[in-house]
Image 1: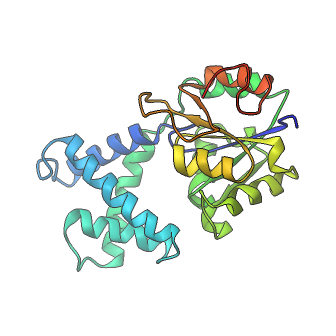
Image 2: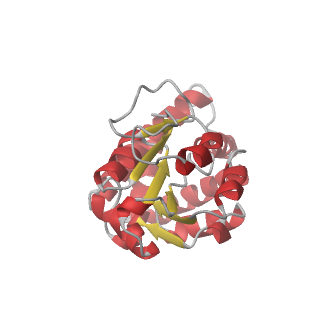
Length: 242
C-alpha cells in the first residue's frame, strides 16, 4: 500500500523546541534575577525539563488542566507552593515571551517539505493544544504546509495511544497504512505510530540514542526522508534506514 500522506510531530521535529526552551528559560531567569540560583544554565534547564515532563505526563493521563499543569510547573520550579494561579500565570507568560523570541525551524525542514510537496499530503499530530501549536506554526511560516492540525488537548487522547494516530489519519481521510509519521521520540512517536499501523519514522536528530523500537525507520535528518518514502516504504526497504 503506497504512502500518500505524512503526519508530523512539531516540537524537536520541525521546530527547535529544546533550543528555544533553553534560551527562553535563561532569559527569564536573568529577567527575574534568579540566574545564579540553579547553578549553571544547563542545570536550570535540566530541572525545568524534569518538572515539565512529570507534570505533562500527569496531564496527558487525564489529571488536571492544561493551564493547571503550567501553574504547577512554576510553583515547583520556584519552590513556591502557595503561589496563586494569577502569579504563576504571569511568571509563565513572561517566560513564554522569551521562549517565543528564540523560535526557529530546523534548517532541513523547508527543503524536505518542498521536496515532498508534489507527491504527498501533509498534516500534524501534536500532544499539545491547537491554541498553542497553530500560532506557533503560523509564526514559523509553516501552517499553510499542512492540511490538518490535530492536537491531543482537543482530541482527548494523546500519543502514543493508537486512537490519536487514527484520529489524525481520519482527518486526512486515509487508512493508517497509507500514512507515515515523523517524530523525534522513539516511544511516543515511532512506537506509537507503528502500533497504530502507520509507517513509523523516528527522527533521531542527536544520534547515538540506540537502534530504537523494532520495525521503525530511523533517520538523523530530514534529507533522507524523500528517498525513504519514494522507495518500498514497508520496513526493510531498500533505503536501509532503521
